[in-house]
Amino acid sequence: MRNIEIENQTKNVSARTKEKVFIFDTTLRDGEQCPGAAMSEDQKLEVAQRLEVLGVDVIEAGFPISSKIQFQAVQRIAREIETPIIAALARALRKDIEVAAEALKDARRKRIHTFIASSPIHMKYKLGLEPNQVIQKAVEAVKIAKEFTEDVEFSPEDATRSEKEFLVELISRVIEAGATVINIPDTVGYTTPEEYYNLIRYLIEKTSNSDKVIFSTHCHNDLGMATANSLAAVRAGARQIECTINGIGERAGNTALEEVVMAIYTRGEYFNVYTDIKTKEILKTSTLVRTVTGMVVQPNKAIVGDNAFAHESGIHQHGVLKNPLTYEIMTPESIGLPSNRIVLGRHSGRHALKDRIIRLGYTLDDLQFEEIFQRFSELADKKKEVYDEDIIAIIDDSARKKIKTRYELVKLHVFTGKGTVSTATIKLKDQELLDENGQPKVLTEAATGDGPVEAIFNCIDRIVGLQTRVKSYRLQPISEGRDAQGQVNVLVQINQRVFAGKGISTDIIEASAYAYIDAINRYFSNDDNLSVHFPKEGETI
Image (tube, rainbow, N blue to C red; front, side):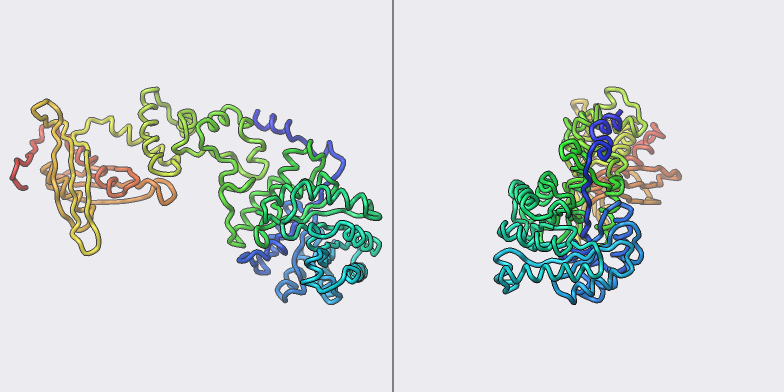
């Protein structure tokens, strides 16, 4: 039911739309310029191969003139990638363009992407050129690029801070010179969606022969609007989006491929366009880029963040369990994620916990469930996320506690540290020793040991009056994370018999005490006639 409903919401976008939006991926060029994201030649090829599987139309493989490694990486990608167009960046200089052309020589489909700054501030302070000189250099660069390939893209750098009339003249001239794609970069992430929409519309309407080229977007995320700006440009008539996996790139990054693609996929009727991206390959591609660059993705990152399809709020969990469409506008499967994730934590409610218990294969009556829910809530207050292993441990431990037990831990205090003698002070409730009011008596003792665990065991031995020998002690985490519960398993020899004990807690010292008491209780449950000597006031054992 889930998939049918969502498919009806987003079904077959390409079949009902007339125009395709080309996806130009610049992860290997602009994305790699992000500090700390440099990739080796082998890594760049691996990412390029994954981009090919993903279905991108253009891979901007690098900036060949910038270094020998860049040149070799572009050259190798051009040789080994078959389907996408391979693009190389070049400044509006003959040498740049010739080197780019050489790197692309073996590409099955190739594009030279040349650029020059067009904003007044860039022309004056960076280039030191007059506007007419910039136009002359741009036209010459496009003509040189056309000597090597029919597919030439031109970008007026910092276009969104350029004068519109100048852009019209510049773009008209480079189209006349043979440019096939006109990219309008928001180089410094300055524009807003409305401004960018109006600029793209203006340029398409005013530029000569604009119908003979594809207009493209290239947005940076300095003000957090890269995705919104790119989509606004699509509505204005742009038919290529330049973007990167996970939105990596200089400063605050570029438009995130996964965001614009899934926006078009999910809101196809609104944008009236489609892409050829195989959306189920998005997560794999995102994960690879994270791995090779070392650039982590924040948990709340749209589409590919760890929390993008995770639900912890009890109200949300209830809704999603009834019908995923209540809080999910796209399926996790659509990006290659096996399923959504119901995160059990302090905000989760009974519905989510009950559903998880059933999925784990347990059947509990109402009374049992309420007991488990109470213990779950207590644990959730101690740690950020409660895992399946935690729930199983709670249920198992609860079942174990149904066995009649003699001793119950009331209070535990341990003093330990380097250069000090570890000391444990413990209070145990004895169900078989009653006080004057007929209530179980609470026994208190203190003991030392070679470490906190031995101090605890020695202290418990003093309270219960037994001579024991610990034959085995094993500590292991139940789940993941720094706040994971620890499980302690002990084998305790008492007389000639061995008893197993298990304890669970987020505090491993406390878990050790629980495990030891569990073994002691098993001993007493196996011999009801055992006489126990309890210390009188002032008496030592």
